[in-house]
Image 1 (tube, helix red, strand yellow):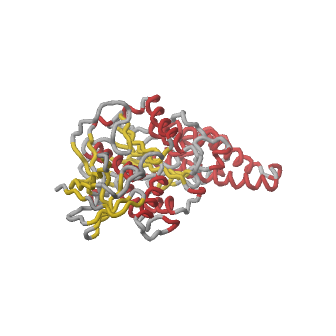
Image 2 (image 1 turned 45 degrees about the horizontal axis):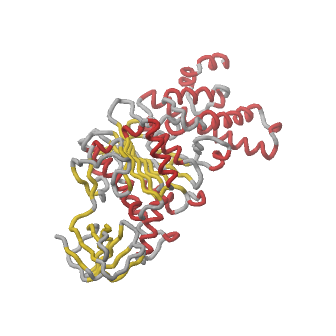
Image 3 (image 1 turned 90 degrees about the horizontal axis):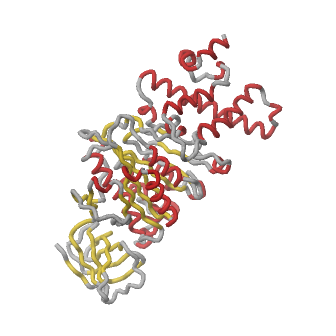
Length: 461
């Protein structure tokens, strides 16, 4: 039931306080009309007795409590969804911004959504090929997984995000789509995302929701929920495999902190609201696979770690909720390694589920372990060489040092426009291990060595 109230008590940032309300519900939409007839939308953030706290979708600059009217619409924020949304670009309010026609929705979905019931979940499995060796081999992504990317200010996470969106695919021929949500990005970044999707043709199977830094703060709260709602529709009603990419979750958390401060809530760590963990989980836990549907939602949330601090509340809490992380390194970026992935700090807890079955899984797993071990040893030798000089290194140490350099330049630093199949990435990994004597390949069985390096095995006998 729609009701209109004129007793606006106060305006604080994006928040309006309305007094004398009755029967108001949480998340209910509100239409605010000014003295000159302009209409602005908001939603109920909190209802306590006869007072309601309304969060505006647009700026409240220039508004006065005098003459304002608040009309409570009796419904929550929804998104009209349709398969026709693939290939389109929308703003943070769900309106088309690509010059195309309005969408004729098949249904309207409450964007608040719900986390997937654990009983209904299916364990994430099946490989998603991104074409990026450091991800496909070292930190395998599987359908239904939540695998965030931990970046930092100035690091090329935008380029990596578009590369993943452009190259990601499933190998069984099933329908695949990408839902891309950008929050608080600059206008240049927004145009970059849109033009890259259009230039490469990836837009045909993708939907973009873009909120820029100049757009209302509240839209940054809505974008990941709209993206998740569309993904749920495509995955669980249209049986598609959907990859959701969200960037930048730090901007989302900053918006949450701004709204929390406007509500005069008691702050938690570093000024973020005490419910940050719970709020992030309402987004991350919407990814997965469920019984009765062949579709899946895989999620990659990108966040910029303030001051590259991985213990900051945003990456810290994200790491608790998700199944690993993909970490970008500033040192590699300064060495012009692209993408600058720190494989030693990256982790995919569900990698084993995406490595095939039987001997294929064992071969992939052992290769990954050996690459990890050799690269870690190579970095130690590099530090030793800085102190003592390369002349003090043994012959084996020099092999590890050379491996570390090749691994970074050839395996990790493949560039943003190079796409490798999983077989090409695995073959490159075996090729990088070829200079090592068999005695150093302690993570690989003799059977696997004979399979992939038979000539080497014979020569060392």
